[in-house]
Length: 154
Ligand code: CMP
Image 1 (tube, rainbow, N blue to C red):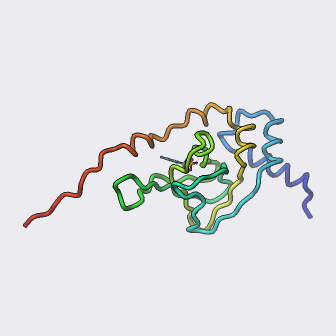
Image 2: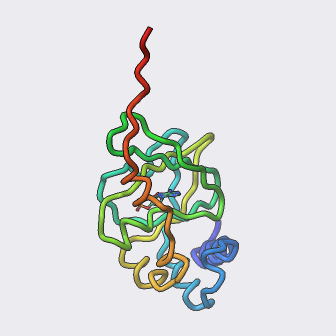
Image 3: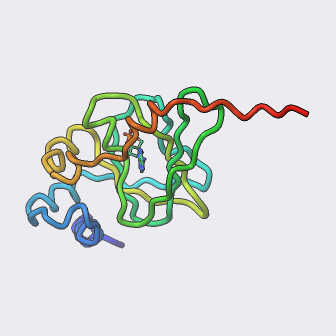
C-alpha cells in the first residue's frame, strides 16, 4: 500500500516534468504537490465550459484535450488546438477573475489532470512570468468582424 509520503514524492516527480514549473524551487514544488488534487475525465467530458465561472487551474498529467471557442456571431464552436501531457489550462479565469474564455474537452480515452484551486494557484504560481504574460490572441479573435456567408445566386 502506498503511503502519503510516497504519493507526495510521486506528485513532486510528475511536477518536475512540467515545463511551466521548471523554475520553481523544491520548497514551492513541495507545497504545490501537497495541495494538488488528481482528477480524471472520461473522453468527451467538458472539463471547462466557455462562459462559466471557475476556480480551478489544470495541468495535464496524461491524455490530451481540445480547446474550442464560440465566437460572437458564430453558431459553431471553433476548434483552436489540442493540449497534452505537461500542458496547462484554466489560468485565464483565475488571473482576471472573469469567466472561462474557451471550452476544454477531454479526448480519447480520457484525461488525468493535476488541479489547484484559486488560492493555491495565486499563492504558488501567480507570480510566474509565463502565466502573467500568456496571450492567446483571444481578444483579437473575439473582436474579429463577422464575415457573412457568401450568398449563392443562380
Ligand atoms: P480559462 O479562460 O480559465 O478557461 C479556458 C482555458 O482555455 C483558458 O483559461 C486557457 O487556459 C485556455 N485557452 C483559451 N484560449 C486559448 C487558445 N487560443 N489556445 C490555447 N488555449 C486557450
